[in-house]
Image 1 (cartoon, rainbow, N blue to C red):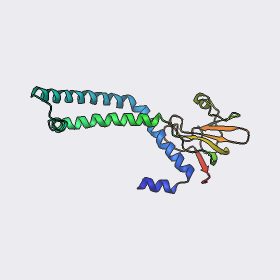
Image 2 (cartoon, rainbow, N blue to C red):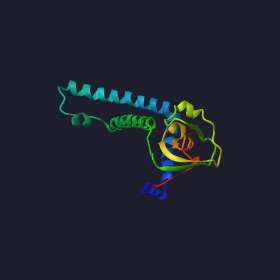
Image 3 (cartoon, helix red, strand yellow):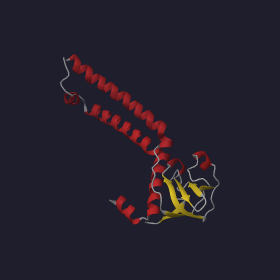
Image 4 (cartoon, helix red, strand yellow):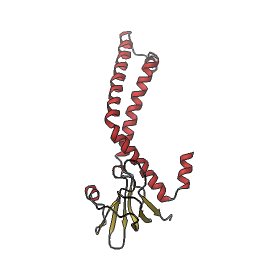
Length: 197
């Protein structure tokens, strides 16, 4: 309920920055801890396989397999706990990987104004209206604090590894800006004002 109240009290732009910040923090945490988390999941998987093999062998040596529920009843509380942990570990790693490696398109077509509040925001003007390669954007020059850029959103993506990206169409050019939030902390580096229509 608190999360819903937070979202309702924010402007459209603040909501997007909040969402991009959450994705960036998740990516940063997982990036720092992925080796440990994956190795723990692998250990849990090995143990779960051992438990499953033991239960299966016990059942088959007794003369048959009745049903899956009877297999589950053969497990000790500790075995059940380890199987659940293995399942949850795999589920978490899969879902986090899917989430941080899938860019979410958040908006387009509305008027927006980006005001740079902190250093670390990069941007570049293009005269072709298509998204540039990520390498081009990461090499873009830093924008000045308090610089204001306005246009119509042609692209607004979570892209957590770089703290979000926005493309703004202007009369004769398109400006792409990345680093809307700090990719480690999720803290906003810009103010994003978006029209509500």
